[in-house]
Each structure stands twice: as C-alpha cells, then as structure tokens.
Image (cartoon, rainbow, N blue to C red; front, side, top):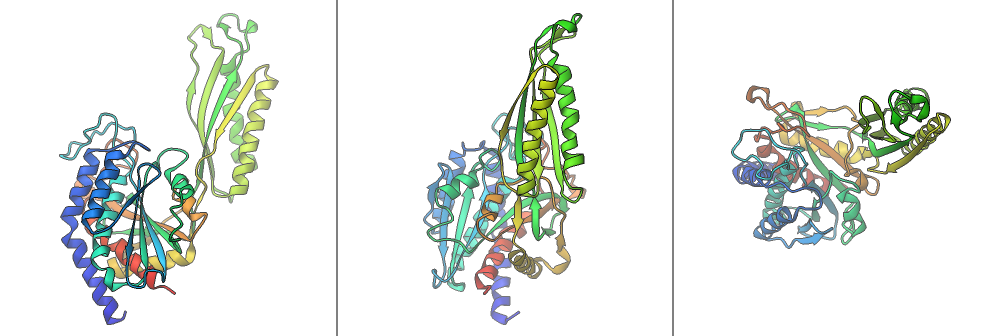
Amino acid sequence: MPIFAFMLLSQIQRLSREYANEVISFRRHLHAHPELSYQEENTATFITEKLISFGLTPIRMATTGVVALIEGKNPAKKTIALRADIDALPITEQNKVDYKSTQPGVMHACGHDVHTSSLLGTAKILSQLRNEFEGTIKLIFQPGEEKNPGGASIMIREGVLENPRPQSIIGQHVFPLLPVGKIGFREGKYMASSDEIYLKVIGKGGHGATPELTIDPVVIASHIIIALQQVISRNASPKQPTVLTFGKITANGATNIIPDEVNIAGTFRALDEKWRSEGLKRIQKMAESIAEGMGGKCEVDIHHGYPYLENNPALTQHIKQAAAEYVGVDNVVDIDLTLGSEDFAYYSQIIPASFYRLGTRNESKGITSYVHTPTFDIDEDALVIAPGLMAWMAIAELTNK
C-alpha cells in the first residue's frame, strides 16, 4: 500500500474510533424512536439535521428519503453511492435497555437504526476528508425497505440513480450470526426474490354433521397447500434454491361449522427471474385447478415483491480487499447465499452493486437474537468499525480504475 494511502487509512480508522460514541448515540436515539415504513418523518428530519451539521446539503426524496452529496476534488471524475435503510418493524420490543423503543408495537428489529447511524458516521468522516479524494459520494437514506413495493423502487423511480449517476452502489446490513469485528461478503447471486401469495378458497359452508350438503373449503385448502409443494420438489431444479412457505391460514368456522371460504397467505422465493415467473404461473394454475376439480374455486392474488440480489463480482472483490485492509484479512469471511430478500436488489438490477454483512453477535454479552425478533440487539462495538469501514471502501472504490 502506498504511504499516502496508508496514512489516509490510519486517519479514517482514528476518526471512526473518535466519533464512535456519537454514532452510538445516533443509534440509540433512532432505536428509541422507531417509525414504520413510509412513515419515517422524524427519522428523516433527524438525518437531515445531522447532515447539515456536517456541512452537507441534503434533499428529500420519496417523501421520507434523504439524499446528500459529498464532493471531493474533481467531483465529476466518478460517483459512487452508499445506501442505508431507515424504517422499523411492527414488533413489540422485549429488551430491557435504556434505549428501548418508546413507540408501542414498533421496533428497530432489523438493524436499520444501525445502518442509518453508521452511514451518518461515514458521512461525518468523508465530509471532513473531502480534500483527500477525487470524485463524488452519494449518500442514500432510504425509506420503506420492509414493505412492498420497497423504498428502493420508489427512490429509483424518482431519480436517485441520476444527477449524478453512480458507477456503483454499496450497502451494509447487520448480521447477528457473525461475531462483532467480522465482515461478510459473497460474490454473485446472494439474496432471493420475494413474492407474496394470497389464496382465497371458496366453497359452500354448512353444518359439520352434513358435509354432503357443503363444498368444504378447508379440505380443498388442505389439498392445495400439500400439492403446491410439488412446484418446488418436482418442477424446480434441485440446483436452483427456491422456497414456498405458507404461514397463515384463516378458516372462520367452528368444530361443527364448515365455513364458506378459507384464506391462505405465503411467500415464494427464488434466485432466478425466469424460474420465478414460471413458478408463480404453476402455483396459480395448480391452485385454481385443484379447487375447481373439488367443486370449489380458488382466487389467486400474487403481490410481486423484490427481485433477487446480485453482488457484482468485481465490485465485491474490490471492497472485500478494502475491508481486509481495514479490519485485517482474518476478519473478512465468505458467507453463503440466503433465501431472505432485500430491496437493495433493485439497485443491483441497474448498476454494479455489493451488499455486505456487518458482524454484530457477542455470545459473552448474550447478544445472539436474530433479526425480526423482539429481543434483537447488537454489540455496539460494531459501530466503532462500521463508519470508517464504509468510508474506506468508498474511497477505495473511487480510486479503482
């Protein structure tokens, strides 16, 4: 590494440590005041005020999204984007911490408070070092990651990837399976598409003692649920990761009442857009045919969600190398693909993108809960590392030919 690069790396590491307590205070404020998808008004105001205090000029997009530019020397040379999501989940927090959610039934259970505070720390570091790099860094604080159609799709539609257009985009997500201090990467396909499937099975209700006078939608629904698993076991290639899960069934009958209808809700995940389309068609046709064959009807409503997420190999290799320089090669690990989904995928369908994972687990402190649970929390030592890490990645990518 050239001496000037080593000195800049050391400076970023020092600033990240120096600002860590402030970044942690950002995170605790956000954690205590979570807001649901597309309702993040106070969160957006908080972000805007902090960016202004760093000498930046943020603008609002997609109602509660915030975007700001950090221009270095020769700002037109190259632009890259850094993204954080800002919304919380409809979960009641069970942690007993000073920064516990003050909003009943709302919690930052997926770490978006971490992503936001970390990117604010990155912004503070980079704004202070803008004379040390060439190019422009676009900061994207995005609403609505947790809810269709995904804030990323709205931000893109409103032009977040234009004026200036980034050559690449980098995103970060907490990873409670990875110990604090470790950073995870994967090249190529990483996260699945996600579609919501709603089935309304319509029959004819009646008394449970006279089933011959009814068209039992409970029985029909049961056949549909079991049969649809063949879409995975007999239609999807064994080499193609895919999941079909039904997590909700509502049949408002009773022990002696057969209802008129049954409602089923589930999710379909895939890592290939062609198979995704084919699989959804098979699901619809099979559900409708089974219901019809049993004398009933099935109305299929598919809510198309996020596409699969592709980590650009060249970009991922480059920021992985930057991470090794920042935290040490022993703290950089390869991670497996997942059937989870993320609306960061929308960016990856348009420009080179890479989505990496920040270790937040600490078993000695009892911090082991997974995301989307009421006891999720992080080892805040991760916020000593994360802001400077992303700042160094950003500068490394700006200098990459």
